[in-house]
Length: 332
Image (tube, rainbow, N blue to C red):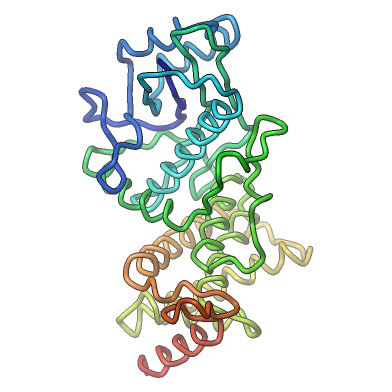
């Protein structure tokens, strides 16, 4: 039997009573587990303590972790490394799916695969920490309803993520570098998701704000006059009331100024620095509203730079640009 885990930081579920089965497309992804007896099976599995030590065991015992087990152990070392990498990346998707519910800094700590037979355990740990919109590392509490709602977003995220055949995965350093599998002409939804993941992985607020803006630029198909177009299209897309549209437009224009000062090396005033946490939180909220509406209600706006000739339902950059131009006129 194989035991596959991924320990999580900064996650709590105050309604927790027993392992929570999380599903995607009605299929089990993993259980969310906290202080259950199954921890003993994991830490007492073959060479777990010898290879990973008390610290890893203690973290599993005192934090929520993602877990599933297989009846039979796979002996192929490459496959075992792929499994543990997949578990880690699934936990990353869970954190980003939870972001669609509310801001958080839930972070995969490490992932393991171990066995009740004499197979060496594998562990991956990345020096990456998700932060909340203010750049903090804070415990986030989710109720049962929110966790299951997050899995609907997990399913959507999984649908736009690239898939790689097991045998083609490069594990030279035991870690999967997804940058090796990116193409230049990736769909806009996938590009926006990468920028979201990047934004959440930095505590440096000017960098976080820059990535948030890149999300909006990717989704709204802008090329030239970026500040005005992104501000206008964001406001028109998520706001109905005229006064709300103007407030959002003005907020994006002001945030662009902060981004521009950072990108171009200009001096950032002390007052601007002091307001960065609030600026980042405001933009985080706007981006969440845009992504939520775009992903759930307008899948047809997932464009490529060049139209997919094999799929007539797809749009290219210019068609999405025209879509937002028409939206602007309809709001006047």
